[in-house]
Amino acid sequence: MVRGALSALLSLEEDIEIVAEASRGDEVLPAALESLPDVALLDIEMPGGDGLEAAAILHERLPSCRVVILTTFGRAGYLRRAMESGAVGFLLKDAPASELAKAIHGAMKGERVVDPALAAAALSEGDSPLTEREREVLAASEGGATIEDVAARLYLSEGTVRNYLSTAIKKLGARNRIEAARLAERKGWL
Image 1 (cartoon, helix red, strand yellow):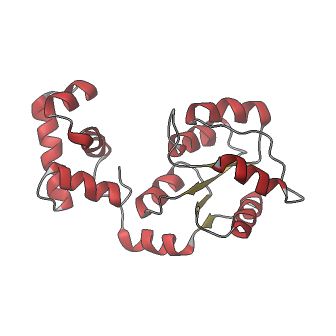
Image 2 (cartoon, helix red, strand yellow):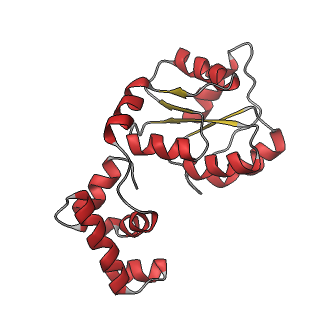
């Protein structure tokens, strides 16, 4: 419903043409390769792969396509990860509609388009202290997964999983892995 509404809204702009829509992350690349868009507007949370993964794949396989992330998740860590994935824009869904069209036009001109308050928060927040593997283990442990479950899912030994979780907990100043995962999620690091 939201995608359809955004499509209808953007179609009202004289110089914006909607050439494709994808409801799932794993549909983004095939749709983009078929339609060759100038700009792809992606959400972070999508079934079949998230928008950050889709942005990285588009950046690699179709570098002429500029990616703008439009999301409800205004977290500094997501902004950083989006920019690292090759996105040129990051806006929140509660921004005025006129800002979205303006952002698309800016992206077309090669500008970076980022919500100013979120950019300031990202700068003050700093980088994630977690390594990629610590992030992966912490994310896999969310939702109450046992050490055994995480070890099996990531093809690690249980001792290695405990070590990664212990290090992540210390780095985040948390009391346990549940608190560490919540903190890292809230900051957009997972």
